[in-house]
Each structure stands twice: as C-alpha cells, then as structure tokens.
Length: 70
Image (cartoon, rainbow, N blue to C red; front, side, top):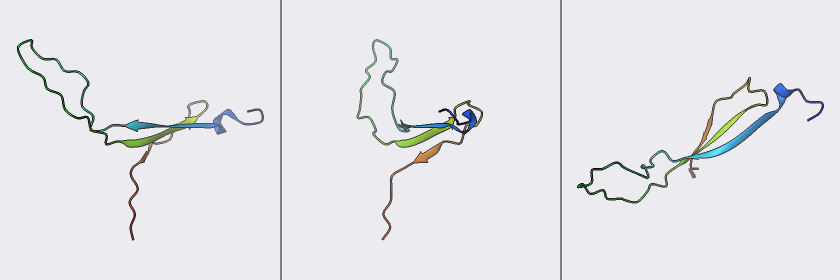
C-alpha cells in the first residue's frame, strides 16, 4: 500500500441478514411445552465498507433478490 494515502484505501465486506429468523432458544417453565418449527431462510445481503482509518464510513448497501422485467 506504499504510495497510497490511508484515507483513500477502502475495505468492503458483505454479510447475510436473516430478517425473519426466530431465536434458537426459548425460556419456558418446566411444565410448559415448547415446540419448534422451520426456520425462515429469507435474507438480504448487506455490503459494509469504510476507509482504512475509519474516518469515512459509508452507508450500508442492501442487495436483494433480482427481478426480471420483460
């Protein structure tokens, strides 16, 4: 990275956001029954990025499913 200003070097990474996910565990009383169900797999991909010094943190970019319009 020689020759580059640290403020001009950016890093980006993407992560999955499961916005309809249910908790893995639940607190119940010993005499109550707790039934599980299928977990939702619906998610968005979020791109996060900032410069090397952390002085410029850009807004997250949300990447959803593509829609084909004919």
